[in-house]
Length: 256
Image (cartoon, rainbow, N blue to C red; front, side, top):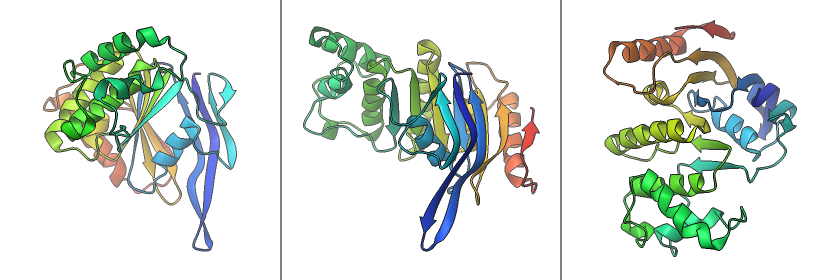
């Protein structure tokens, strides 16, 4: 198993009481899978992502990638947040080149690699523009290109499209789904949007709050090309809605 989370618990102290962000969470992820962590605020989905990415350590249990315990962020993986994180004094090309030095890529190759991934996200010709000259969606595309340029093993994404308008969000969903298929990357994607999860994921990890836990892992039986208006898409979406309305507090093996 490529990514393995076993009985992971994470607790915080808040205002004199203990808050359980993750409660005995276990999850296996195969290499090349697109996994969506789906749930309401406070369900632990971002905490789980941060534990996988190495930004936080669990109090008990284990988090492993490729058989090795995760103890810190790895240069082999990247995280894309809702905040684009672009440097305003660097143009688009130089923002995408940012991670290549850390990966010890020869400087002579930086421009070629950066232009390749700008083309992949649809921003060829934007190399000399600065972040202030781009829309929010374009800035997020630069962030994605920057992440892909370092050829990561895993891409962690924490509600990366949450601040965008609906039309731009849908377009970027289409782009990241296409890129995930072309680049064959392992992606772990946090969202609270059911339709977004159904559109993107191979499997959806449904999480619940108080304490943060996995309620169900749902395999999405749709192909690579997904139609949001098709009956099979709407059927899966409605079944996920049903899961959130179920009163059972225990883990459910769910098949669609």
